[in-house]
Length: 521
Picture (cartoon, rainbow, N blue to C red):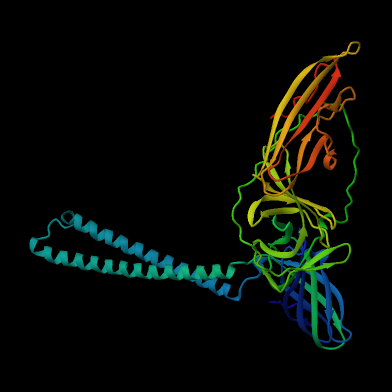
């Protein structure tokens, strides 16, 4: 495993990867090697190491005889062509000998074929070659020609057999050479120069960073509507393609992101100008995937959380093996159970469906990274969403798909435009809608209906709720200007109508209002 180094003393070491800390975009690898060192100056060379090892990140520690000092560490790239197997030269020479023998036997076969062609020519033109040959000599001539042809054909047959044997040998040698050359690639080796007062055993620890590895969070949110419990399961998808095997290692997963460290974003000037605002997107895809049966998850071991106030790290239970082929493996990090408030939410201006909604406060001990979340409602797959970064104590709100027992209808009641005023003539738009919500559950349920008012960008435009509008319970929901919410508790089987109307007015001399044609049912 370790090659010799020229120098006062060479120490051979044996070992491998013991622990790995995987970040979202790279990994830190810890290796341990044992070496028998001699007194005085010497060198320990460790090889092979992965070619993508970051030399600047290499850290080396050693424990051994009293007075052991590490004086210098060097790294270099060993190219695959320099790693010829001891048997490769002999096989290469044997392959050349076999190819030469095949060429020689092929030449012999060609000579025999020429002889056979000459005999055939004599047979075809016997009268021209020997026109005076008496008939009683023909039998003797035929025998001589036949014997000669038979000898030539026997020689060709023997050569064909030899060629088949030679081809089989060439194929065997090439197959063996390919086996020896398979997987040969560039590697890195580390040379550690040391000074020791006495000989003895030394344990060398290497730590280095390497790209080609990473992990990403994935979540499952399981809602039990009967008990009002929301379980959030943290998972990690881990993969590596670093060029080295991680067999039976201690695996840590860290949330730190070294790629972002050390570089504070730099602000550039912010310029604004007068331009027509972009046309807003009025319709969104609110379709949810169909539900399907899902089994309850089997109990699994959770990772151990290791946190130091500013960083978070998980220790995956047991020991783990990760091959360097990029395959993703999943590990459970933690599971959190919360009591959740269950309600219905509807955005009838965008979708005719109501959605089941769960809201709670995240009770974890450490922040969560953003990632995809798979939603399950009462054991049924409800869809997928994306979980934003979540801090302990922050609200956790998730929509669990369409609730067919909440019926929502939005119908236009009035849509008119006209002029008003005597001295200062203005144009005026009035729109009103009826939003009917039916709770077909056998239980009381809180329902929130969301809609939006136009938001004026010009002070000459006035927007207000209509006089007959049902007062909203919340304005500018979640900081979104113009978004209104009506929240209330619907009794089992109750039907209720919300009246939503608004008035928009602007000076008569303004030709048009950009974006006035809002969403219609």
